[in-house]
Length: 317
Image (cartoon, one colour):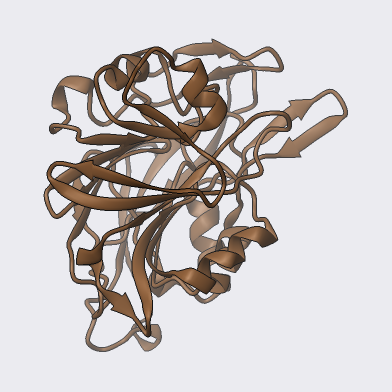
C-alpha cells in the first residue's frame, strides 16, 4: 500500500459556504517509531488540506513553505523568516545522550533551494532536530532571535539575540519593521526554549488588539500561554506538535503538544487559523498526521486547520 494516494472530501455541513471545500490528500507511508536506530514501522496517513483560509482584519499576506519538522519559510509581504533550521538528509543519527535520534525523511528543500532568508526564529539551539550543523551554517551573518542561553552558545555571531519570556524587541528584516515577543515554553527539563509572537503595524488589528502570527516552538500546553489573548489577536498559530516523548531516567516525559493540547491552546488564545508542524519523520514523536486529523475533527476545529505540503508554498492568508 505504500505510495497509494487517496482524496477525501470533508463534510460540507460543517463548512462556511463562502469557503472552498477542504480536500484531504492521504498518502500511505511508513513511519519509524522508537528512539534507537532499530526501526519499527507503522502505517499512517498524512493529511494535506487545500482549503483557503480567511481573516478579514489581517492586512498583510502570509505564505508558508514547510521544509520539514519545525523548519518553515514564513513569507510575510515578501520578507522571509525561517524557523528552526534543520537540513540533514534522511537517516542521519544524532546521539543526544538520553537517546539516539534518527530522521526518517530529509528536508523538502535544501539550503541551496531556499529563498533569501532575512531573519531566523530559533526556538532552541541545543536539540539537533531544531538546529543541525547545516542549520548552524545558515545562521552565520544573519539576524537570529532565540533563547538567552542559546544566544550565548551561538557566540560570536553578532546578529544573534536572546529573548526572555514576554520580552519584545524590534526587528527590521527585508526593509520591513516587526516587533518580536518571546513566549514561554515547557520542553525538556533543564533547557531553555522559546516561542515567538510576530507583530507588525501592517497586520492591522481586531477589536482593538493587534493581529499577530504565533510560532509556538517546542512546548507542551501551559496555562501561561493563555496570556497571549490578553494583548494580541492571533491570526495564525503555527504549533509544534507530535507529542514528542523523552526517555528520562525517572520515566518518559512528553515534551511537545499533542492534538488535544493544541486544540485547547488554539481555542484559549482565540486564534483564527491553526497550522500544524513538527509531527512527522522522527521516532520520538508519538502522534502523527493521521491521528492529529482525527483529534482535530473530534475537537470540531478541522475547518480551522491549514495543513502544509512539504516543499510547496501555501498562501495561508
